[in-house]
Length: 234
Image 1 (cartoon, one colour):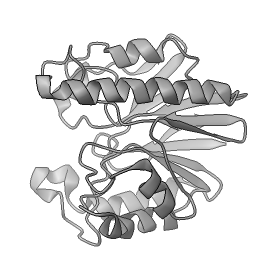
Image 2 (cartoon, one colour):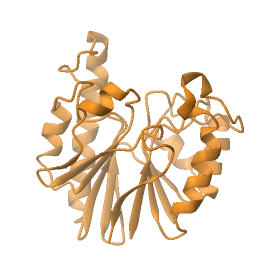
Image 3 (cartoon, rainbow, N blue to C red):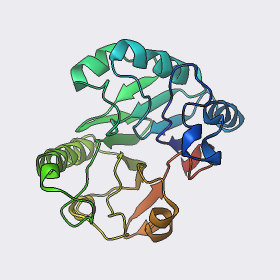
Image 4 (cartoon, rainbow, N blue to C red):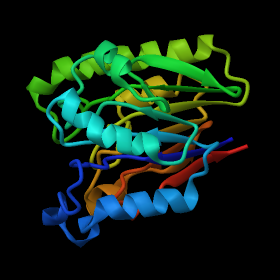
């Protein structure tokens, strides 16, 4: 099995330059994602999509982008909600609407070919410089969902690997470990992939690579220059 990751695709239906305002790396980013996906991902592979998938405001519009991702190579694709995915109202609605290759994760886990995939959105933590008191309810909810996802993953007995997908990193914007990181460290997580960070200062301070038994990896599409990242290969 090969497992790829990409996050923060910020698609906008068929609009080629929906993100060009944010800098040269975003010019024609939709086209680049599609081309690089075809060049790397095979039909038998698995892809993790780490949230902020589309700018759509409702499920009907979001499905235009989701169906496009479904049509790209990959036997199975797992996705989590990002903070800009306002079309994602509930896990039940999203799960009912997902096309053939797509599985939504939110405090849940799925097993495939000896690997277990679990995930949730995550959030800013109280130790983050950007944290506001209004973030507390989201933080508590996502901590609960993360523990639920990890417990469900362990119960599925992963023989080959336990792969966690988040939108928010388990690190602060200046690279500190958060309570999400502490919780992850209590479980046998093989890989933890996440997005959300888009600034070079965040990229430079972010811990990546193997910490303990877990491989941590940023998969924001702009960081990857719109090329899916190979997270795992059997």
